[in-house]
Structures are given as structure tokens and as C-alpha cells.
Image (cartoon, rainbow, N blue to C red; front, side, top):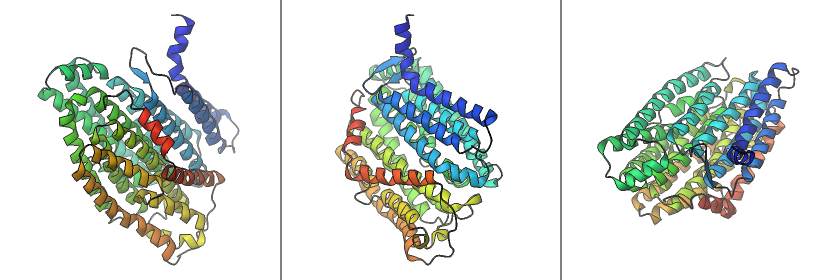
Length: 482
């Protein structure tokens, strides 16, 4: 192999290599570096993320298959990787103050997040289902450790164990689906599966395999009825970790779901659209109506994430290029508003997350107006108030559903959005209209202020000027079967 050929093959992995090296450096600095400089771990991680983003942008116009055609470099993989970098960067900014108050400001926290982004990259760039599974397990192992990172808290340990056991069970189901598909097709390459289903009538074995793979997807995006783990895991995990888990994994799995269904299984559209539609309705109804009863704000956000998975599935069920672009745009908007909400939760909750009930936010606007305003903007966006990213995200997703003739599904989604507005506005009401119970005496790390500013600007940028992000999302589906 010539040097030129080697460089061509290695180039798509440069962003991953940067993150891997950064993660290892963070671990070595943690072990051998001077103590008392723990806050530098996050900044070192941010430098690695920025370099990875720079290398990724250099691949924007590249379309190639490398490493025995198992890894694809295209606009969909690049745009989702940039979203992962944004999510990880905001998580890094929210984390230093939180970890310091918990006494767990350790280098492995940031390294685990960097390694999880590597897993996310391979998930989205996979053209072979085994490579996707490897990336999924890299992500999952890192998330299991992060969920229980504050090990002196029983809820963290419980969250990690529940996620480990249920995640392992979901992985087993997914692998069983791969076995069924392989037994029929003889390959797990997306192209080979697409070629087979386009030339042969689907057998019962193949359909069972597809259903099992979809179950694995639905579990990872916490879609009903495979959502039972989410409230306990998000509620028990450290707040910045919960925000990372609720966003990054969803973006990756939705991107892979769109790629797999739109490329490999498009001829079976009549079968999987029905499944996706049913799960979408179940997720919206169960997520929203369960959230109405929640008094713990982290559990409320967990059930909210279930409902938002249902909204995004409308775009998947649309089975169109417009629907795929709308889903990616919606995931970007969803990531910003959820990271902002969980970031405020990490600040208000204080040491041990003792203040995570909605009643603990009473009068927050009077004592901490900036925090209350940031939280209100995130919740207005989650509710889909015009002028915010959440509104535009829902508008494009619902429009793609209407264009594909899924009018009853869109009507159900709009109704559920109206129901969701109640519990989002309930939190805003408590912050602004209820007398404060305490002084809210806690410090805010400057990095968290920067993160909240980025979130708020991003929400309004996507809500008022969505064109660039939507155009990039649409171009990432130009070559798919959708």
C-alpha cells in the first residue's frame, strides 16, 4: 500500500484519533499531573473537541467508503459528529462546578465522555451492522460508568446498575435480530441487505430480525414501550451526565435508524412504517401523560424525552428525505434545550442534588433571574413556542408527516404538544409566580454561564434563522433511498 493510499484511508479517522489521544492525555495528566488543577481536564478536552471539529469540517465534501467498506464518510456522518462535539463541549462546560461540589472532579469523567463520542462516531458512520454494534457498546460502557460516577450517592449506583442490566438485555435482543437477518441475507452490510430485500420477497425470519433490530433502536432512544429505564436512570445519574445521555445517544440512534431504514430496508417500507407509527404514538401519549404527574424535575425531563422521541419518529415514519432532514434538525434543537435544562438542574440541585423537586424552583426568578430566564427559554422551546428551536423542529417534522400522508399521526402529535405545554409552563409558573422559599445561596462556575449563553443563543438562532442548519441536514440525505 502506498503512502498516498494510506493517507486517504486514515483521513476519515483523524477526528477520532484526535479524541482518542486527547482522552489518553487527560488520563495521564490526571495520574501524573499536579494536584489542584482538576478544572483543567475539561479545558483540555475542549481543545481536543475543537480539533476534532476542525478535521471533521475538512471532510464535509468527502464521500467515501473505507476499511473494507464498513465505514462511510458523508455529510450525514459529519453533521451528526459535529452535533456530538457540541453536546460533549456543553457537557464539559456544565461539569466543573458540579464535579467540584460533589468531590468527583476526576480526569476519567472527561475521558469517558471523549471515548463515548468515539463510539457515537462509529455508530453513525457504520455501513456494517457489526461495526454499529461495536460503536454502540463503546458508548454504552462509557455511559454505564458515567451514570454511577458520583458513587457516594445511592441513586447514582442504582441508575448505573439498572442501565447496565437493561442495556445488556436490549443489546442481546439487537444481536438476536442481527442473527436472524444474517441467516437470511448472508451479510450485514447495508448494501447487501438492500440488494437482497429489493430482489426477494421478505420472509418471516427476515421480518422478525428487522423487528428485533428496531426494538434495540427504540430502547436506545427511550421510545415506548421500551422506555421504563429512562426515568430511573436520568433521575439517578448526575445531572450533566443525564443531559449527555438524553441527547447524544438519541442523535446517533436516530441517524442510524434513518440510514438503515432508508438505505437497507426501504423496499420493506410498508412493514416498518407501521411499527414506527405505533411506537411514535405510544411514546407521545405515555411520555406526556406520565410527565403530567411528576414532581421531580429530572423525572419530568425524562418522560419529556420519551415524548420527544415520539415526535422525532413522525419524521422517520414519513420515510422521505424531508423527514430525515427534519429529524436531524429536530435532534439538534432537542439537544440544545435539554442540555440547557439539565444544566440549570445541576446548578439549582446543589451538592447531592438535594433540590430537584419542582417546588424547589419556587421564586427562582426573584433570586436568580438569569438562571430562571435560561430555564424558561429551554422549557418554552421544549413546549414548541414560536421563535424557538423547538417550534421550528416540530414544524418541520410535522410538515414532513403531512407531506407523506400521515395526517392522523400529525394530529395526535399536535394534541400531545398541547398537553406537554402544561407541565413545561407549570415549571415556569413556579419560578416566576410563587414566592421563594430560600435564598438560593450557591455559586455558579463561569464555564456554566458560557454554556447557558451558547444554549440560549442556539435556541433563538435555530428558531429565527433555521435555514442554514436545515439546508445542511437536507443535503446529508441527498444520496439515500428516501
